[in-house]
Image (cartoon, rainbow, N blue to C red; front, side, top):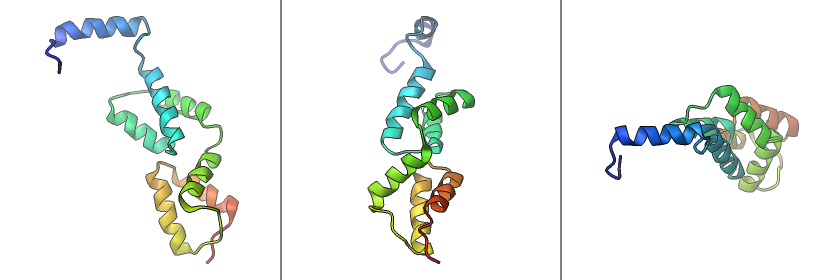
Length: 125
């Protein structure tokens, strides 16, 4: 439509592409999720970004895709944390609250972040 074509002319072409599986929202979602995971973003952020792009992938389908791509969320979360903050060393609760907010903004769930903190046990009181 931005190029001046009418909606009535566009829709049959898009439908034909989808029918022949040349255009697939699921395939786009998988490629996009893989790209964002490589950039260090979590499932929450990826789901939100896809919804902002108008991709309505079934939740189960997206969860399957994300679990297939991200073998272990804890490994990804650890990688993102180390890239930002360096080696994992004991920190204060105040510092942890700042760092956990960063991880939340990257799209990791609070349960994943809590699991990360418990596993490493690196927070001072």
